[in-house]
Image 1 (cartoon, rainbow, N blue to C red):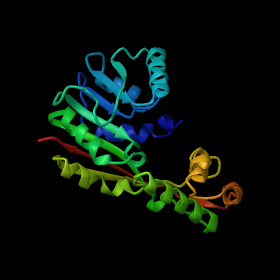
Image 2 (cartoon, rainbow, N blue to C red):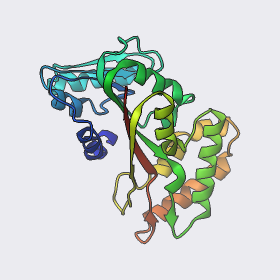
Image 3 (cartoon, helix red, strand yellow):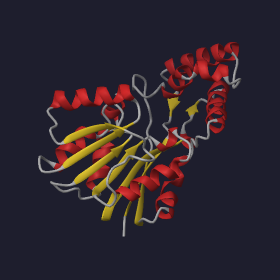
Length: 250
């Protein structure tokens, strides 16, 4: 679902990079689909796309997608984003979408991406920043849910505000001509991403309770309040800030 929802935004990003037929590309953290099909069509039969994913289940799903769509120029491998084992200085583009916001030590993944790309090639990331994810009218349960997620993320070494830091990370890793593009949306009633805050809280509910970040009672109250607020068509839901940033390896 995420791949379909973000396809147009990723296509815009790839347009900025003048990705030519025959190019060799790596997508780090491709998940079950990522941008594999978008990239495969851009590089054409003479090009190559390698998806790197640490989840064995996601690898199998991605390989199924490759077979289903007949993407003969795509290979999906099970690997670590920080140490892919791929040949250094050999790819025209290394890209990743919504991975850094979920992992500790994101600079290590940026460093791996820069190491893989050839001189003159590009590294491009699409990341989230929680600064803008708000609703109106305000809701105490909403603010508490964001606080809970941020507390849990910090305890795991994860930075929910990584989006704004992307350009700095790319420059620190040695890239030049770094550019950035912001994205933000309004999620109306019926939009699949309108409930993303509630979805995150429910998906992490067991871990949030086990780590003492919240209690089962508070969690039940929060989710009920969030659901009612989201079901109200008069509630305005503003997305996370998303930042696309890219740079060239000198």
